[in-house]
Length: 322
Ligand code: SPV
Ligand code: MG
Image 1 (tube, rainbow, N blue to C red):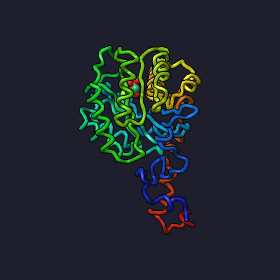
Image 2 (cartoon, protein in one colour):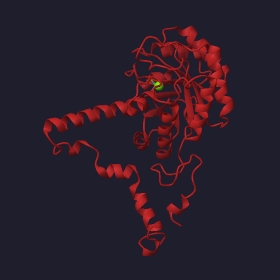
Image 3 (tube, protein in one colour):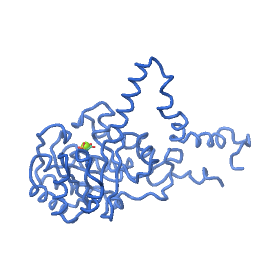
Image 4 (cartoon, protein in one colour):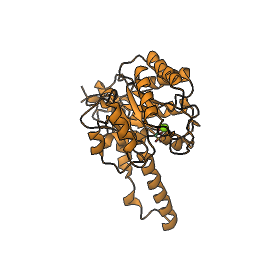
């Protein structure tokens, strides 16, 4: 029996066999395993659509970050809850369809109160997400690097959002990350730690501590005090020059490269657009863009060709199940 036959049943994650990631789950690490406390941090790579998800998977990343900033940007929205949760969920579904590796979805502040948060988390799980990250801000949120005004949610009220997600999404593999914006909002370590303790009590599986400083002092101080009561997740967008060895030494569980596929795409697209304008054509750019063959390979066109021999002209005897 051919491999194609064996892949006819949908996987638990819902991959049809013809999706680029296929439905095999061998070798896939769960998000819960990635976000455990390890000797060395796990990496989650940003993706904002199915193509970027597949590219990250092929590069060897074990998990994805469905970034609110990047998904919003690719849809032409500001990262200020302009995109509806269902628009984000549509994108996540395409990512989960195309890639086999688990996806942690940036759930912003949960799109409202406890009721919205539990609804969104449940829908995202159904559509292929392996976890959700919810930040302790009010709705609508604003991207953490844009303004200085980030009103924080009341701790008790935010704990209600976390508890509601936990009580609603009963899948033990689904990961709930509580994101603390206290440092972003200009509060100190005490506020961040108080929140971390409360969110752990409310059932969070991990704590994301965010910082807008260009050095890692804040998050390292937090990690030193927190002592890994729950795994710590960080987003070193602003303190990008810090070596990963420092995170390893601090016991950081997971590092999110939060927007780097999107920013790489912006730079590449800007460059190629400018060149076509200035060079007056495409003769010179061919070596600098992905060959069409690479695109066809990423999207598994070979599987479609093989399926045609099975379903479209099975009697032709040209290779199907012979
Ligand atoms: C995102 O990628 O949307 C994030 C990270 O939430 S940040 O942009 O740093 O807020
Ligand atoms: Mg975000």
